[in-house]
Length: 201
Ligand code: ADP
Ligand code: 5GP
Image 1 (cartoon, protein in one colour):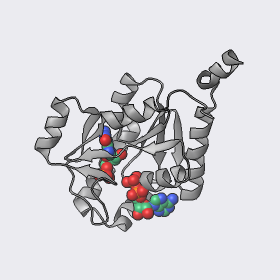
Image 2: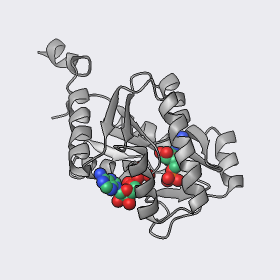
Image 3: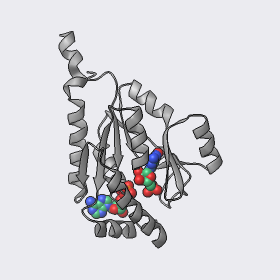
């Protein structure tokens, strides 16, 4: 049974290393109503990353071309690299009734808020800044300098994150994933999304 006509957009943000990817993939695993929007970035792939899975890796010329052609729903710079959300994938999936999840930083989330006011905004944080540093070091994918830059950016993002609807503290990843899944389910059940069932009865 199709429960909603159009999909909803779920925007997940939070400092790099908070565990967004970990929590998002656990939360959407096994859900047939959710899909993940793969972003484009000019950042170099990390050793375990696959082009087209974590990101579409592009050079700066291609990225600028996508901006000029209006192929990106939003885009932003983050610690000296550019990131953006391909527009067509997101709009096609929403149109077909699927929910789409974006993992993007705060400036991009603000652009989405202006364009899609009914999107749902979720901010994922680690239990503390010390734990954030530990996770970034343990992930082993960033230099000491890049880790410092990401920690500075984390504090800036906290100060700008006053428009999010939900905050998840990622202490235990399983529990955080359950919370995210519960948010998705609750948002889908909102009366405003299902009012047609009353009208059609
Ligand atoms: P992000 O996508 O926010 O940058 P990742 O999902 O890459 O973060 O997680 C950063 C690091 O922290 C990874 O090594 C991941 O395995 C680890 N991690 C994620 N969630 C937790 C958690 N709840 N407890 C401990 N480590 C975690
Ligand atoms: P990372 O380099 O750690 O993969 O990502 C750095 C930051 O860029 C994270 O906060 C992540 O959410 C954000 N990001 C990833 N894709 C996009 C995107 O398409 N747009 C924006 N604005 N931010 C993104």
